[in-house]
Amino acid sequence: MPRAFADISFTPGVKAAQARYGSRDNNRGFELAEDPRNELHEHEIEFIASRDSFYQATVSESGWPYVQHRGGPPGFLRVLDARTIGYADFRGNRQYLSVGNLNANDRVSLILMDYANRRRLKLWGRARIVHEADAPALLAQLGVPGYRAQVERGVLIHIEAIEWNCPQHITPRFTQAEVNAAVAPLLAELNALRTFAETHGRIAAEPSASNDTARE
Image 1: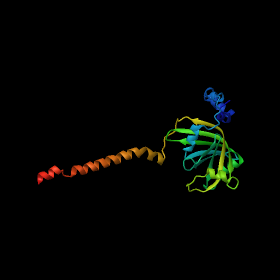
Image 2: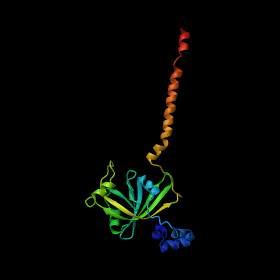
Image 3: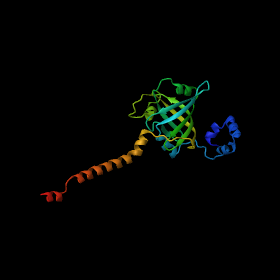
Image 4: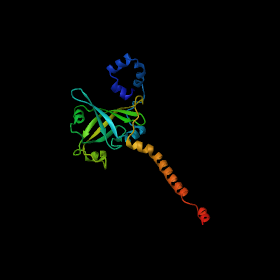
């Protein structure tokens, strides 16, 4: 059984390119693998739950690809089961390019990035748009309490394939929260040193009792 992503992505044109550039034999292993990798396991679930954004690709009726950045609080992309993820679609610029594309062609591809640790997860799936009037319980499940953004609809994605990418060429970048967590121990140590220096500086500046007695 081939890897699901290879079954989807290794078209005749892709195989021809692999043959031309000398990687066909190496990539043939993906077509002979035993694990199709079309289900989420604990590692992927934890990774998805910690993401605060992803890139989503759809295809228009005229054949043009469109890539959109989706963002929100960490975990706004929800894992509903081993082969289903979903997210609340917040109001944006109201052009509805992705929504329109998905209404015509449900194929979708996602890339989830962890720049700090140079990791990325690729997902292929088929998307379904849901509205609160049709599935209020589901929209509530996808909602993000406390996040001030208007939810217009939900997007459910049935996963067809997953694949981890190599870290090559990923430039490390850090969110404000990651920077704060990294420098927190240094700030704590700095504050402790300041307190120590201020305390001992005051002690050194104060005359001792023996010196007071001698002066009397």
